[in-house]
Image (cartoon, one colour):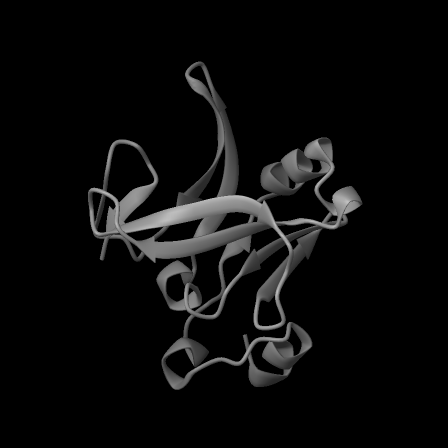
Length: 125
């Protein structure tokens, strides 16, 4: 993402993130957001990275109000937002929605993670 695109999304990119690709969102994830009516309630899917979890970092995935410094990824009338602090951890990651026998959830395929926990929400770099 260049600086012009970053400005359109209200995101200031640091020197270290200028060369990194932003995360991607699958059609399946946007379809699930549309099914639950996120945009209709003015919400977006927030994907953030926090310290903690059994592997050092953990994902915080929830419906939230977008903030000014968020990177906004849009599709099918829905939005996924990533805060500027989490962006380097999610460079080139894929945000998807998975439905399995054990349950359905938003998942992150993160090429930056060197290992992850069996729970799928915790990782290390």
